Length: 113
Image (cartoon, rainbow, N blue to C red; front, side, top):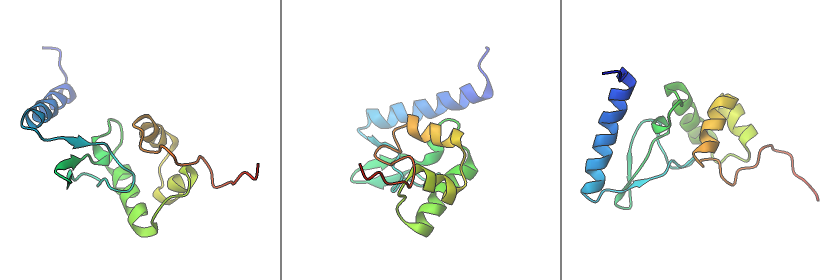
C-alpha cells in the first residue's frame, strides 16, 4: 500500500526480467560501445542492456552518450566522454558504479613514468 509509482514500475520490469530468464533469455551488461540509448539489442542469442536501464541515468544523458560515441568513435578518457557527451559527474558516477567505464583512464594526460 505504500509503494510509489516508481516502485510499481520497477516491479513490472523485474517481473519481465524474471520471466525472460525463466525462458532462458540472458542479459548482457551495459557496454559503452555496444549499448543503445533505450533499445535492448540482441547480441549472440542474448540481450544487451541500454544506458537508460541504469537507475538515475536520464533520457538526455543516454542519448548524448550514444550520439557522442557514434559521431566521434572511441573515447580515450572519462574526461573526453564528459566533454563530448555533455554529461556531468553524477552520470559518470552512475556509469562507474555499473562498471561501464572499466579500463578508461580518468584524463587525457599521459604519464611518462
